[in-house]
Image 1 (cartoon, rainbow, N blue to C red):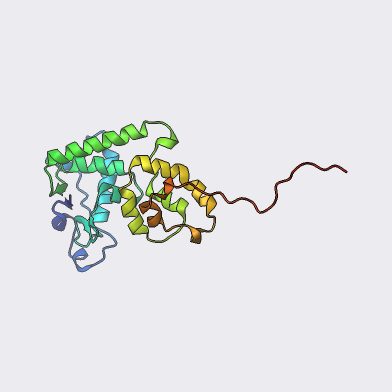
Image 2 (cartoon, rainbow, N blue to C red):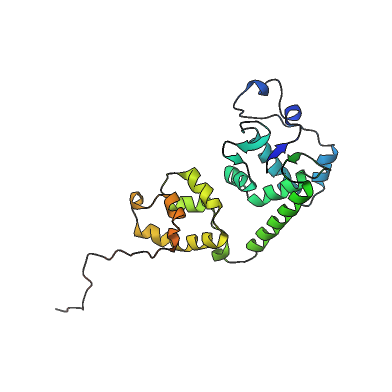
Length: 224
């Protein structure tokens, strides 16, 4: 689905910004008395929603078609937004669900009705809440950032990210559990599989061969 900022050209462009191809800033209205703004301000999670909204505007300002949340790789998802900004995906899910509401209508979505999208987002947020409530570190999702940092072989990042997005939470948890042993078994990163190869081949399921020391084990103790 493609998200669009409603009335982008009228509200978030001016005579100067229209002359710039690669925007480094954007004008944002400072009006606080509109009905949409007041409805957002009345929400329980208003701070998170408005923070997400500003981030969404910043992302939209850097798209090939400004105001349309899509680039050469396709639609920008809430997971993409989280990866691009470092903010939690949950706040983008909640913000989009609120902001496409016809009574606020800061965002538009062209591939499904508002009701359908809101239902999907509510289901996704509920699932995230259940995951957060599992309580132990082993049951939390192992993010791509965590994987990329630990794997430490910086090649093919974007392709690896696309693949990682399609990996289930169960598999991510297994990667989190087994990857440290693989890293220890290949201390020189040039001998590790490329990240995409590792993911495509489901190599987290492989048995890891531990290199034995070349030094002989002591047989006993000698006293003099």
